[in-house]
Length: 359
Image 1 (cartoon, rainbow, N blue to C red):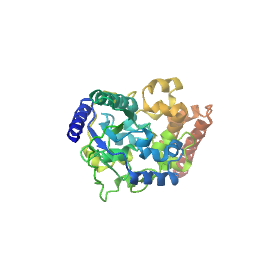
Image 2 (image 1 turned 60 degrees about the vertical axis):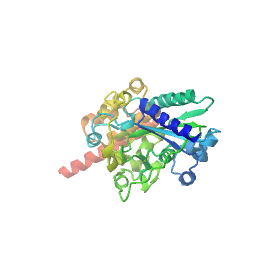
Image 3 (image 1 turned 45 degrees about the vertical axis):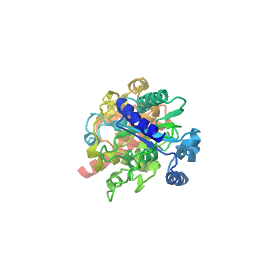
Image 4 (image 1 turned 90 degrees about the vertical axis):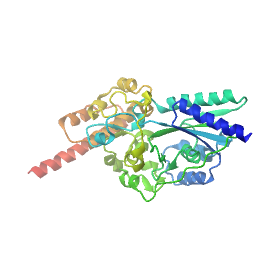
């Protein structure tokens, strides 16, 4: 029987490659150390307003409780780094809006879920009576921990998964299965003494190696948080209007990353480096049209304007930028007005300082 399942795993890997996955691995369902680390993270409140993390609790580390009968986690990864305006060039131009590279194209949830479902169906057609469930980020599964156990990479000091041959620019997805497949060897850690990600994080969200405080993370602030962005963190956000990639951009392992060949992940509507004033001028109808099928749409128009307003407040003071902010000064949303007023105050302070210096 073990020979049969060993052969099946090799077939699963081959089917995964045919579907566009770069790697597929198999993990056991028990990760007690990761479970305790998760509970400590929750107790410290580092999940912020992501209340679903607290609701699911230990179940995130116990797939056999989430889906009874689960014996293994099939973990798969797919590269997503698109051919786009160079990220560092966009970050270095404060008049442009920076969107995390993962969100430039089609929503990855849809792309991966479809591919994983195809893989799972292929397995099910090959093994009669098997049961499975597919997860792509949206379900309560500790995906990075299971991916590490499946040999796909190690969890770096920035808490992202790193593969020694592919860096970290890839998505993860899982199939929970009741098949007793042979498991892979867990990946070993190769971060060494490097602390590039800790040093480069704009808001110091990586509070210690392998410890992330989401409440300070720009990805959390611009995507997960629905209320007001803490004033003390706004300047550090710079021109990042949806997510942040700095910890990956400066990770030395990403010299091995490869551009994706997936057309679904190609940038849309110049989001790889559009001018902030253009993005801020979008009507709600334009926002919905230009983010159709995109992960960006989930934050909604109000948070989109909030984020861009902060970036405009961090941009150089020009007549065009101040006029763009003034045009939204009486927006019906209290949230938008608050961030617009903050941005205008930044420019007023800057202009006053410039005038005093010129005297």
